[in-house]
Image (cartoon, rainbow over the protein chains, first blue to last red):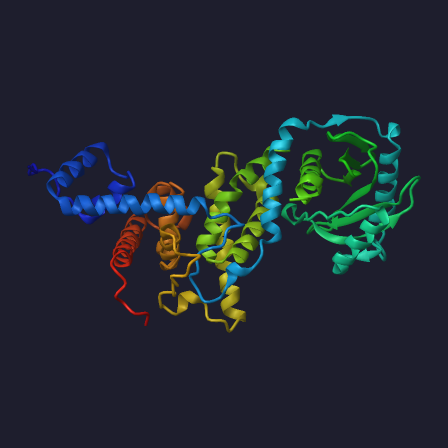
Length: 254
Length: 169
């Protein structure tokens, strides 16, 4: 059957055959070899079955699924981490991004935005006391601000964007008090998230620029938000999406 | 959402799968994915647009994993599992009794080089040459690792399908 010129089928050929790593010619040679060698054919079939099984098994490997136990440490008992829910929220954000196009509006038309920008300018330059309650008391900060703002809320986690929470503060405003959260990146650049109760804006992102600061602002059912910083517009929009998906009241109820 | 973030987020499930393959631990995998996404955002502008995204991210994640592991060895008395070449215990508990879970456990029990190579080729569908590039080894090495990994999985799958006559040692 084998022509004299054809090199014998070796282990390497069978391995490559399963992964489709052979030339068309060599593949045909392997196929005819397998017809005459049921043992090798069974082995290839088994490898393929295992490969298909692995693909299926891996399709269930997500952050919220426990891994099979492979070592004594019971790591699978840990609850779903922040990263998992964050990743899930981010994926929602991807789809939200299709429908929520940012639009432009002048800051002067927006008292909310004027307050947010003023608070940003006031406190991001502060050296000694940029925040009232520091990130070391993050839980307390969330509870306290939630109580004062009259609505529970989660402190957005922006680590995926390279921003670490510094802390936050309560601020006076016309109606209910407002809250400001401050974050900084590895280079010390600061961005703020300003929010207060009520729907001052729209669900879609609106963009505003004032001096070197740029801001995106939007509303959901509970709050109106502004994220402000001296960042390129695209990065700022990423942050707005990130925050929006994390704070979406529908997601929080799940 | 910007193109950058959107594309990175699309890669998150694959990054998580690779992280699980490397760390064999969900919480460590989550940390690794976070670190990798952060670094990718910071380094984005350094990436030439001709470089395919997923291999770039996988290489980055692998480097992060290797440097973490080195740190751990240096500063920690904890014995890393790879240093004691004993197969991990795979309890036939109720929760893990499905065949797929057992297969995944066997996969994760492979030595790290075989495990990640089989993952890249068999699960993520990289060619030998792409996998060789990600791992920084020769293509022949990819082939021989896969050969050994498959042989082991075949053997263990066969053993597990025989009636349970062995006692746990």
